Image (cartoon, rainbow, N blue to C red; front, top):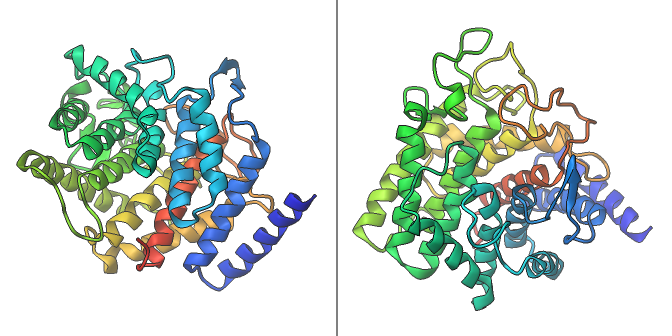
Length: 387
């Protein structure tokens, strides 16, 4: 009962603040409300998921939630977030889903969180198994694993985190080789540099078209890449507008990733809706146009980070951040912290439709994680003194 009243109180404070325009404290309260709903519903983080089949709780959907929780911790340093994370990670022995020989990016995603905890504590158990997994993958001499763009977010930051921690160039080089293969080679190249957006995989490159003749760019797919770019650029040393790369090669990689980030930002600015959201199908309003939380949250994450770090011009991009937050906070957050307008799992705009305010997605965890990523970075934008 006490926790229920706390959720109601957080909701009332958050809704009242939204009506007056957001400030950093408002954003924190809204993020707390959303996260409290999730942690209350899923109190034991070790229990496997059971959507159509049983899966261990270190699968990618849950890993994305913990990415968001670590972001929330950076603006709201509650010990309960660390305890919840460590209970999950300890249960899985700080190891990739399916073990150290896993090469599927979905199985490796959880290792981002392990490495973030290592950066906070320096405890070897949090990094040892990750190193074994990455060294195994590099030993295969293959860089063509990321055949779908979601994989760029699931695994590329694992390698760049490891580079940040160790300074070993091999990890950054491998991350870039995989990224460039997806970008330039897979399906003829999954990044359309003419439009600044990504085809989800080789099945969506031309001549595939939406019903109105436009290219099919899935919102959450491009959102995954956008988030990966933020995390990789941050690992290369961007902080408050300053670049701290430690090698000439790292600076070269940074320049390319930053160019892609800016190119995507320009494209996303053009296709944002008036209500602050992005459609599941980014450039096609007639086919699965409508509100959608996960892509919008990831775009808020990237745009806020870009403005805060002076990569994006605040006069042009700040309004997009404000609109996105207002749309998410006003239209998606239920009184108890449940999130509406979350597209369930899939790989294209038509997946898990219809997306509505009340529909419960097949997995709630990654939607919460995306929301927390966006909220936390937007909070830092509002509070420029945050470090």
